[in-house]
Amino acid sequence: MRNAELTVSDRIVLALDVDNDREAIGLVAELKDLVGMFKVGHQLFTAYGPDIVRRIISMGGRVFLDLKYHDIPNTVAKASTEAVKLGVSIFNVHALGGLDMMKAAALAAKETAEKLHLPCPIVLAVTILTSMDERSLRKELKISRSLQREVGHLARLAQRAGMHGVVSSPQEIKMLRKGIRGEFVVLTPGVRPAWAATDDQKRIMTPAEAVHVGADYIVVGRPVLKAEDRREAVRKILEEISMPRTAAGSKYPTGARK
Image (cartoon, rainbow, N blue to C red; front, side):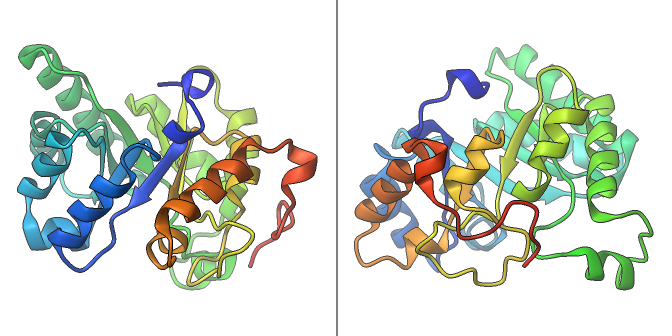
Protein backbone atom coordinates (compact mmCIF):
# COMPACT_ATOMS: atom_id res chain seq x y z
CA MET A 1 0.00 0.00 0.00
CA ARG A 2 1.19 3.50 -0.81
CA ASN A 3 1.17 6.47 1.52
CA ALA A 4 -2.30 7.81 0.72
CA GLU A 5 -3.90 4.38 1.18
CA LEU A 6 -2.42 3.66 4.60
CA THR A 7 -4.36 4.11 7.82
CA VAL A 8 -2.48 5.29 10.89
CA SER A 9 -2.37 1.74 12.24
CA ASP A 10 -1.13 0.39 8.89
CA ARG A 11 1.97 2.54 9.24
CA ILE A 12 3.10 0.97 12.51
CA VAL A 13 5.53 -1.94 12.27
CA LEU A 14 6.23 -3.49 15.65
CA ALA A 15 9.70 -4.98 16.00
CA LEU A 16 9.49 -8.42 17.61
CA ASP A 17 12.98 -8.16 19.05
CA VAL A 18 12.25 -10.53 21.92
CA ASP A 19 13.93 -13.55 23.48
CA ASN A 20 11.48 -16.31 22.69
CA ASP A 21 8.61 -17.36 20.45
CA ARG A 22 6.11 -17.38 23.29
CA GLU A 23 6.61 -13.68 23.89
CA ALA A 24 6.54 -12.93 20.17
CA ILE A 25 3.29 -14.80 19.60
CA GLY A 26 1.82 -13.16 22.70
CA LEU A 27 2.61 -9.73 21.27
CA VAL A 28 0.97 -10.62 17.98
CA ALA A 29 -2.18 -11.80 19.75
CA GLU A 30 -2.22 -8.70 21.95
CA LEU A 31 -1.49 -6.04 19.35
CA LYS A 32 -2.49 -7.28 15.89
CA ASP A 33 -5.61 -5.10 15.95
CA LEU A 34 -3.55 -1.98 16.68
CA VAL A 35 -0.48 -2.32 14.45
CA GLY A 36 -0.23 -3.00 10.74
CA MET A 37 2.74 -5.34 10.69
CA PHE A 38 5.27 -7.23 12.78
CA LYS A 39 9.00 -7.18 12.11
CA VAL A 40 10.84 -10.49 12.37
CA GLY A 41 14.57 -9.85 12.51
CA HIS A 42 17.76 -11.83 12.94
CA GLN A 43 17.25 -12.71 16.61
CA LEU A 44 13.83 -14.31 16.26
CA PHE A 45 14.46 -15.86 12.85
CA THR A 46 17.77 -17.40 13.91
CA ALA A 47 16.15 -18.96 16.96
CA TYR A 48 12.91 -20.21 15.39
CA GLY A 49 13.35 -20.10 11.61
CA PRO A 50 10.61 -19.75 8.99
CA ASP A 51 8.06 -21.39 11.29
CA ILE A 52 7.76 -18.25 13.41
CA VAL A 53 6.83 -16.29 10.30
CA ARG A 54 4.20 -18.87 9.32
CA ARG A 55 2.72 -18.79 12.83
CA ILE A 56 2.39 -15.01 12.82
CA ILE A 57 0.76 -15.01 9.39
CA SER A 58 -1.61 -17.82 10.42
CA MET A 59 -2.80 -15.55 13.26
CA GLY A 60 -3.63 -12.78 10.82
CA GLY A 61 -0.46 -10.77 11.31
CA ARG A 62 1.48 -9.28 8.41
CA VAL A 63 5.27 -9.74 8.49
CA PHE A 64 8.22 -7.55 7.58
CA LEU A 65 11.11 -10.02 7.26
CA ASP A 66 14.08 -7.90 8.28
CA LEU A 67 17.07 -10.10 7.35
CA LYS A 68 18.87 -7.56 5.12
CA TYR A 69 20.10 -10.04 2.52
CA HIS A 70 23.64 -9.20 1.41
CA ASP A 71 25.39 -11.84 -0.70
CA ILE A 72 26.11 -12.73 -4.30
CA PRO A 73 23.14 -12.14 -6.65
CA ASN A 74 22.26 -15.83 -7.10
CA THR A 75 22.14 -16.47 -3.34
CA VAL A 76 20.03 -13.38 -2.68
CA ALA A 77 17.67 -14.29 -5.52
CA LYS A 78 17.06 -17.72 -3.97
CA ALA A 79 16.48 -16.20 -0.54
CA SER A 80 14.04 -13.73 -2.08
CA THR A 81 12.14 -16.60 -3.68
CA GLU A 82 11.75 -18.26 -0.28
CA ALA A 83 10.58 -14.99 1.30
CA VAL A 84 7.77 -14.79 -1.25
CA LYS A 85 6.78 -18.40 -0.56
CA LEU A 86 6.62 -17.64 3.16
CA GLY A 87 4.00 -15.01 2.48
CA VAL A 88 5.79 -12.01 3.99
CA SER A 89 4.50 -8.54 3.16
CA ILE A 90 7.91 -6.83 3.13
CA PHE A 91 11.51 -8.05 3.04
CA ASN A 92 14.78 -6.24 2.55
CA VAL A 93 18.30 -6.42 1.15
CA HIS A 94 21.39 -4.26 1.68
CA ALA A 95 21.79 -1.60 -1.01
CA LEU A 96 25.56 -1.88 -0.54
CA GLY A 97 25.27 -5.34 -2.11
CA GLY A 98 25.16 -3.51 -5.43
CA LEU A 99 23.00 -3.12 -8.50
CA ASP A 100 23.14 -6.71 -9.76
CA MET A 101 22.28 -8.15 -6.36
CA MET A 102 19.29 -5.84 -5.97
CA LYS A 103 18.09 -6.58 -9.49
CA ALA A 104 18.27 -10.30 -8.75
CA ALA A 105 16.21 -9.89 -5.59
CA ALA A 106 13.52 -7.77 -7.25
CA LEU A 107 13.23 -10.05 -10.27
CA ALA A 108 13.11 -13.24 -8.20
CA ALA A 109 10.35 -11.83 -6.00
CA LYS A 110 8.28 -10.70 -8.99
CA GLU A 111 8.67 -13.93 -10.95
CA THR A 112 7.98 -16.17 -7.94
CA ALA A 113 4.86 -14.24 -7.01
CA GLU A 114 3.55 -14.44 -10.57
CA LYS A 115 4.36 -18.14 -10.91
CA LEU A 116 2.68 -19.09 -7.63
CA HIS A 117 -0.16 -16.56 -7.91
CA LEU A 118 0.91 -14.93 -4.64
CA PRO A 119 1.03 -11.24 -3.70
CA CYS A 120 4.46 -9.81 -4.41
CA PRO A 121 6.04 -8.46 -1.23
CA ILE A 122 7.38 -4.93 -1.04
CA VAL A 123 11.12 -5.33 -1.57
CA LEU A 124 13.21 -2.65 0.13
CA ALA A 125 16.88 -1.75 0.11
CA VAL A 126 18.62 -0.75 3.34
CA THR A 127 20.68 2.40 2.80
CA ILE A 128 22.72 3.32 5.90
CA LEU A 129 21.91 1.80 9.30
CA THR A 130 20.36 4.23 11.76
CA SER A 131 23.00 3.30 14.34
CA MET A 132 25.57 5.07 12.13
CA ASP A 133 26.21 8.78 11.78
CA GLU A 134 28.42 11.05 9.67
CA ARG A 135 31.51 10.33 11.73
CA SER A 136 31.19 6.54 11.59
CA LEU A 137 30.47 6.65 7.87
CA ARG A 138 33.67 8.55 7.15
CA LYS A 139 36.06 7.13 9.75
CA GLU A 140 34.94 3.49 9.83
CA LEU A 141 33.64 2.83 6.32
CA LYS A 142 35.87 5.39 4.58
CA ILE A 143 32.96 6.71 2.52
CA SER A 144 33.82 10.28 1.56
CA ARG A 145 30.35 11.37 0.47
CA SER A 146 28.20 13.04 3.10
CA LEU A 147 25.70 10.77 4.79
CA GLN A 148 22.76 12.35 2.98
CA ARG A 149 24.48 12.13 -0.40
CA GLU A 150 25.34 8.47 0.20
CA VAL A 151 21.76 7.66 1.18
CA GLY A 152 20.50 9.47 -1.92
CA HIS A 153 22.94 7.62 -4.14
CA LEU A 154 21.96 4.22 -2.72
CA ALA A 155 18.25 5.04 -3.01
CA ARG A 156 18.59 5.97 -6.68
CA LEU A 157 20.57 2.79 -7.28
CA ALA A 158 17.82 0.80 -5.56
CA GLN A 159 15.12 2.35 -7.72
CA ARG A 160 17.17 1.64 -10.83
CA ALA A 161 17.43 -2.01 -9.72
CA GLY A 162 13.66 -2.36 -9.37
CA MET A 163 13.38 -2.09 -5.60
CA HIS A 164 10.02 -0.81 -4.37
CA GLY A 165 11.70 1.56 -1.92
CA VAL A 166 14.22 1.86 0.89
CA VAL A 167 14.76 1.48 4.59
CA SER A 168 16.22 4.78 5.71
CA SER A 169 16.64 7.06 8.69
CA PRO A 170 13.83 9.61 9.15
CA GLN A 171 16.44 12.34 8.82
CA GLU A 172 16.80 11.52 5.11
CA ILE A 173 13.10 11.28 4.19
CA LYS A 174 12.68 14.86 2.95
CA MET A 175 15.72 14.49 0.72
CA LEU A 176 14.43 11.19 -0.66
CA ARG A 177 10.97 12.58 -1.38
CA LYS A 178 12.51 15.48 -3.30
CA GLY A 179 15.08 13.39 -5.17
CA ILE A 180 13.21 10.18 -6.03
CA ARG A 181 10.35 10.35 -8.50
CA GLY A 182 7.47 7.95 -8.90
CA GLU A 183 6.15 5.28 -6.56
CA PHE A 184 8.76 4.75 -3.85
CA VAL A 185 8.15 3.33 -0.37
CA VAL A 186 10.09 4.65 2.60
CA LEU A 187 10.19 2.54 5.75
CA THR A 188 12.00 4.10 8.65
CA PRO A 189 13.46 2.75 11.87
CA GLY A 190 15.13 5.22 14.22
CA VAL A 191 11.73 6.37 15.44
CA ARG A 192 11.28 7.28 19.08
CA PRO A 193 8.14 8.80 20.61
CA ALA A 194 8.74 12.08 22.44
CA TRP A 195 8.30 10.23 25.76
CA ALA A 196 10.81 7.43 25.00
CA ALA A 197 14.56 6.97 25.46
CA THR A 198 16.80 7.20 22.39
CA ASP A 199 18.73 3.96 23.20
CA ASP A 200 21.45 3.29 20.56
CA GLN A 201 19.79 5.11 17.65
CA LYS A 202 21.57 8.22 16.36
CA ARG A 203 19.49 9.56 13.45
CA ILE A 204 16.01 9.74 14.89
CA MET A 205 12.64 11.52 14.88
CA THR A 206 9.35 11.10 16.63
CA PRO A 207 6.70 8.98 14.85
CA ALA A 208 4.64 12.07 14.04
CA GLU A 209 7.63 13.87 12.53
CA ALA A 210 8.60 10.86 10.42
CA VAL A 211 5.11 10.47 8.98
CA HIS A 212 4.69 14.20 8.37
CA VAL A 213 7.89 14.33 6.30
CA GLY A 214 6.86 11.36 4.19
CA ALA A 215 7.48 7.96 5.82
CA ASP A 216 5.12 5.23 4.65
CA TYR A 217 5.97 2.85 7.49
CA ILE A 218 7.68 3.41 10.82
CA VAL A 219 9.30 0.69 12.93
CA VAL A 220 8.79 0.89 16.67
CA GLY A 221 10.35 -1.54 19.10
CA ARG A 222 11.63 -0.80 22.59
CA PRO A 223 9.21 2.04 23.41
CA VAL A 224 6.39 -0.53 23.13
CA LEU A 225 8.21 -3.69 24.20
CA LYS A 226 9.47 -2.10 27.43
CA ALA A 227 6.18 -0.41 28.30
CA GLU A 228 4.20 -1.61 31.29
CA ASP A 229 1.03 -1.32 29.21
CA ARG A 230 1.91 -2.16 25.62
CA ARG A 231 -1.52 -1.46 24.17
CA GLU A 232 -1.52 1.95 25.79
CA ALA A 233 1.96 2.64 24.41
CA VAL A 234 0.77 1.84 20.88
CA ARG A 235 -2.33 3.98 21.35
CA LYS A 236 -0.15 6.91 22.44
CA ILE A 237 1.94 6.52 19.29
CA LEU A 238 -1.18 6.37 17.11
CA GLU A 239 -2.53 9.50 18.77
CA GLU A 240 0.80 11.26 18.32
CA ILE A 241 0.82 10.50 14.59
CA SER A 242 -2.80 11.60 14.20
CA MET A 243 -2.21 15.00 15.80
CA PRO A 244 -1.78 18.07 13.58
CA ARG A 245 1.89 18.70 12.96
CA THR A 246 2.02 21.88 15.02
CA ALA A 247 0.45 20.11 17.98
CA ALA A 248 2.46 16.90 17.86
CA GLY A 249 5.52 18.43 19.39
CA SER A 250 9.16 17.61 18.72
CA LYS A 251 11.87 16.09 20.79
CA TYR A 252 14.47 16.03 18.02
CA PRO A 253 14.94 19.10 15.80
CA THR A 254 14.50 18.28 12.12
CA GLY A 255 17.92 17.77 10.57
CA ALA A 256 19.64 17.34 13.93
CA ARG A 257 21.97 14.40 14.45
CA LYS A 258 22.07 12.84 17.85
